Figure 1 (cartoon, helix red, strand yellow):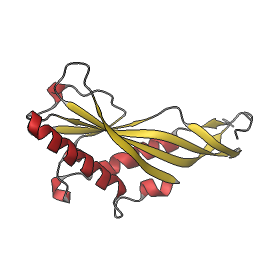
Figure 2 (spheres, helix red, strand yellow):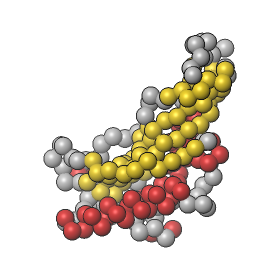
Figure 3 (spheres, helix red, strand yellow):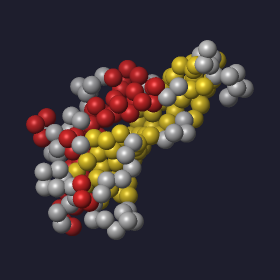
Figure 4 (spheres, one colour):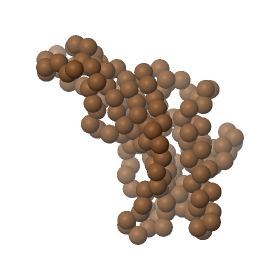
Amino acid sequence: HVAPDRGCAVTTATVVQIVDAIALRLAAITQDNGYATNAGARVHKGREHIGDDEFSAAAPDALTVLWDSEQKTSELVGCPTVNLAGDFAVVAWLMPTDTSASAAAIDAIVRDIKRALFRADADPTLKNITSGFEYVGAYMVPRLDGLRSARVALELHVTWRDALDNGA
């Protein structure tokens, strides 16, 4: 049930905090921290494209945190708070060395991302600002632009409560 508009607007501060908290957890993905990859060395927020020329032997992968700007109001508790749900994605960009290494590299980075996001001893910020954080699934994203790098996206469903501000 969505109540009629009372002049309140959803602030984006909490969305930014969620993206920042996801990025913080992803930044922990380094071999020094016990992960299989060093994908956490390059974490971007909101970036939708990484070109082949941005990869090197020293930086073979990168991660991007994206969020769906169409947040769905699940319940209007009344101004000044609202319960929201949104879909976020972590996109892993990989420059595989050959076809046989590609499946192993994709598997390793997907496992690292899941571990970083859901491990019990991860930074608590994400848990503290959300009421629900679920892994939906992962899928390969084909490169239609002819570049060699591979992409895999992990979908996340997040629920949270946000303060509304009527601009007063």
